[in-house]
Image 1 (cartoon, helix red, strand yellow):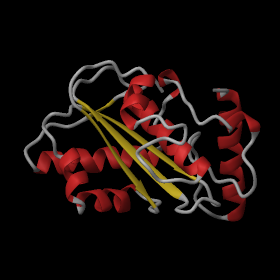
Image 2 (cartoon, rainbow, N blue to C red; image 1 turned 180 degrees about the vertical axis):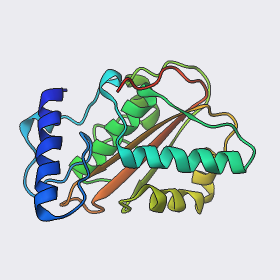
Image 3 (tube, rainbow, N blue to C red; image 1 turned 90 degrees about the vertical axis):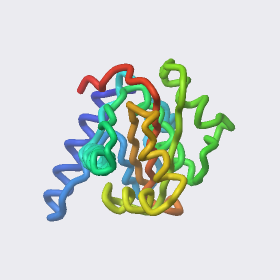
Image 4 (cartoon, rainbow, N blue to C red; image 1 turned 135 degrees about the horizontal axis):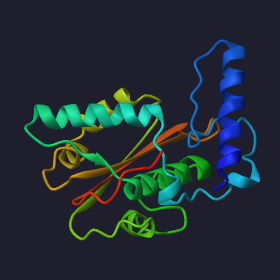
Length: 190
């Protein structure tokens, strides 16, 4: 990933949003293109060392950890490998306009997690959502869905990855992925 490109893009998006009088969504992972994506972003992959959660993803982390605490469970720690896997899957869905636990290249969600360096053995899971811009709306979607709620409240998980992406021309515009693991490996370094 070209971090200079993303830094410039965040700056340009922030300045453009300020000129337009709106609050910017400054993230290297939130697509908001009206036309085609730059060639540098044609590949939705991200390395674990490049994963850095954006503000709305951190809001989601707070929401899920408060929910877990209210239900007598420990907080989840943000994992850079699980985060990179979630981010990759989310970017892929937004960029290629689909919604599925199977990635566009045919890889399963569990293989995607392993491909991003999560090597801890044990239980893993994934939740995906689409159509909601905010962390709170997505959290509510998952909380009100029994299978997603089970993942969010499982005592088997200690680590989480969170990804959010959008593309104005995709069916649902906003896409979210959370990945869960039974062992914490390492935090993002951003």
